Image (cartoon, rainbow over all chains, first blue to last red; front, top):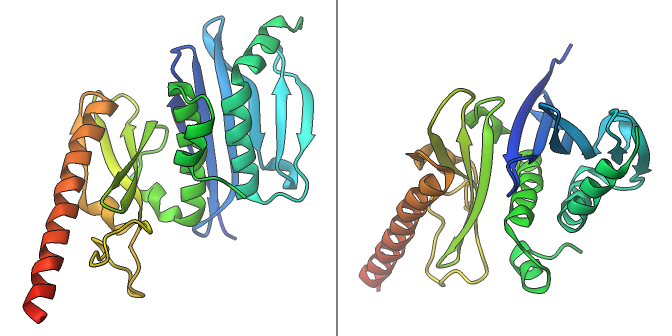
Length: 108
Length: 146
């Protein structure tokens, strides 16, 4: 049975308290899933704020609160992995400060 | 249709955070095309990205700092010839089909430094020399044939 192999990387943003965590899963040499997650520093650790993810079979964006709960899920039906990545690229570049502000404004 | 990154940059505010976000998403796209790139990068590394276009040769560079390490290692992870490439230009490394080999260059060129920017600067200098040398060689060989 083919084994899924996961790798993880981190890209810093300009602020030391903000970063992107990237996970890539491969199976028999092909990428089968990805996660690009915007994280911010809160109370001693990095926590997820918004992520583009191909889990659950359909690419989607999750927005989370300070309790690590998904408060909004946007399904990206009809988009393949690359289309979802391009959408995530544009969206996070334009909106990551707003996601951060919302994250810290949401009462858990 | 997706605009090339450099076209987007002319019409959008583009700060360091935008560049880093773009590099992260582009990295995953490149891995989808060439998963073998992952074999050249340590798992759980800190990464940074930079693009280089020199005389029509376009390189996407990734610098990696392995967990617990103090130095960054920069490598090209994607390589293409743009339409702006001089007529005589050939790729630095060719696939059997004659195109630019995007992964082989990863194993041929690298630079190590204490910061990602310094590693990128050193690698950029190496790649510029390689491109300039290839262009000179191409010109000489064509001149010889004629």
